[in-house]
Length: 600
Ligand code: ADP
Ligand code: ADP
Ligand code: MG
Ligand code: MG
Image 1 (cartoon, helix red, strand yellow):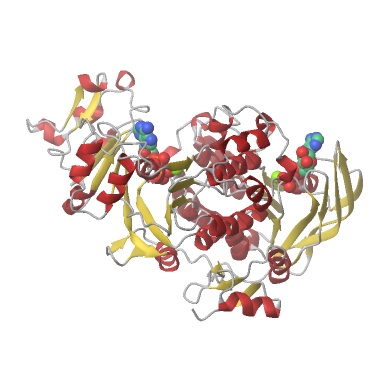
Image 2 (cartoon, protein in one colour):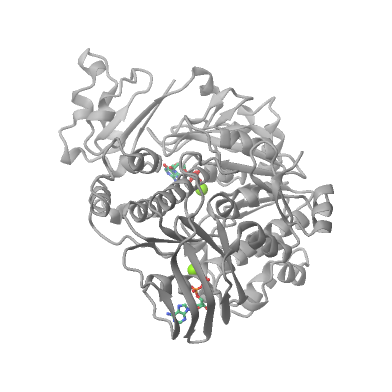
């Protein structure tokens, strides 16, 4: 079976010589595999039944608008939905289980949000036929005899009430009016307003106007609104976006407490959060924007481990050609420890902003060392790194030496130029695109930037822009690297590519690197030392001196009463379930962040 996908936004038959149609060997032999069609307003349509998948049109298209993949024929029976002719196609569905939390984990663009819309009843599946006029009866007929039919029967008969926290919170935010407290009072069907306010720590935002909320606050508002509704099905699409590490750990705990006995679906890229909240996980894999497939359900531990390994045993599928060994420092070729000489240091820094003050008493970063920065939003992390790179001036204190060769990825990213991805990368380093360099192989290609080299930066999606900026920052030869929240908008595989490259560049160039990050799994992988920011968000921040990873995270986790062990198979950190044997044991010992492998 073949899936042929055309990106009709990029396809411009008025600007090319219709190479796709003219060079097609099937067309030349007299049969039709691709032609310009009325239904697509004069743009080409590929007929998957006659197409032989030779890939000539894919190569000839000057806009790189065509993708064709060959899949096992048996998959056709699993087709669930297709967006239009030659559009993205998704296969398989998770089987909802009441009382268990189902997670969906996978690459961006493989259909996670699409699946959630189907499970919420917002999108009627067309089973891969975009011309099918789908309706609930037809869907139930299609699922007859399958376990999933009973779920859809209840859903379509309105016997299940659904709440859906959407992925793009900014879009929802624009339509909200009124104070947080008033908005939430209106949706409090479970009579849990005060409880949720306390659990989600919403005091400081309780009386704010919804239009003035930060991204993280808006996310919390929408999560709170979902939790207050009395529903049977709770759907959360990327709840940890925009929220800080403190809130993520808190959220994970709250979800466990509040959502038992319901159907719960959650998509997220923070493995630690997902691991803690979910019971089961379905892995989504495929080719972004072309097709995606939902795996069988695995226990959350096994599922995450299979995903990292890149092999799904139940379906006998190899998802990618390399293993993600995220943990326990697999960096054999770049390992080696940080040097002992100080590359950059600071002392006695004070900075006052209207309504906010920051103190950074002192600290340093050594040659070849990565220092991870953690702390809540609004505590001064961005202000601090801007002082280090010289974008902000401190009122007192100093940074030494004054850093001249530096490379900085700011937190807030915007399409900064009309130039192309290629131009930006070549400007940052002449051989960043030479196909034999490790940078090209392990960063450019694995980020998929090689497919968009000729796109203008102004046309990129949030994830693409983030990847380009990370790549550019890494390509520049510098003494000091600063990454402010690099994992926003990117998925687990991409975070891994990023983390690995940051560590390698830091070690090889004997640079000093600071990484502000809310995903603890990333710190665990790259940070030699951790810098914790404490104080009162929005009012006063204190940048404590960097301490060894274990000590830093130990103190940090103690505050939340969450303990972490290490997975025996992969070495990745996993939060212990509350009151489990290890949880109690580690608390007794004061060991919130274990470095040794546990025997699960
Ligand atoms: P994920 O949530 O895994 O990132 P989505 O389900 O949002 O993926 O989208 C998967 C793919 O489906 C996208 O890459 C896009 O190409 C396509 N797609 C999503 N929504 C639509 C739509 N409304 N119309 C056409 N194509 C869509
Ligand atoms: P973080 O990166 O930890 O989220 P920031 O350094 O961005 O924190 O901000 C810390 C505090 O300083 C926030 O309360 C923010 O509103 C305030 N702040 C940041 N930049 C400015 C500025 N240019 N003017 C006034 N206040 C600012
Ligand atoms: Mg999505
Ligand atoms: Mg910040």
